[in-house]
Length: 231
Image (tube, rainbow, N blue to C red; front, side):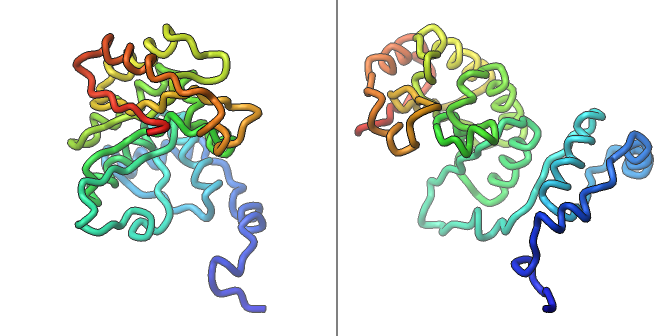
């Protein structure tokens, strides 16, 4: 059989063949010598290969981000849909900044960081509601996106996760992302149960606690806060 398009190939097999040569200090030194301060593109054979290359460059102190996929299909929209926000999932400040720049170039009116999805699939990628347990990291992500784009950067979150659902923890999370430059906060007024409930159950089973969001607004009067859940 002649394999002609990507769907004809086993990407695991391709990755096992292509993703072997490590990016050594010598490779990075050579790249720095040739590229200098210019932005450049490294073409990789698979997504896993790209992740390994990006990780190696970032470990060496070189900013790197992975860009892949059909941008027009993933990001395209009709002008009649304005205003429209692009919600991003991730936890790498550099990658999120680059994604935010791409979103701005496509004409989006807002960049929103997802800190509310409880799916185990997004947890494994270290984004969604699990990020509420890492407020300093979320703050760095927000700051990187704010520095990268001129459109508003916003965050959507829950009121807590698992047993980390005290108001003090929520207040600390909001304060850190507010100080980093979050311009609007959207709060699903339920906590997320990361183990034991499906994403659908997480939309219904944890009780809505609107007063917690009201209290946030009292403590952060200058921050636009949008309440979400059951409305």
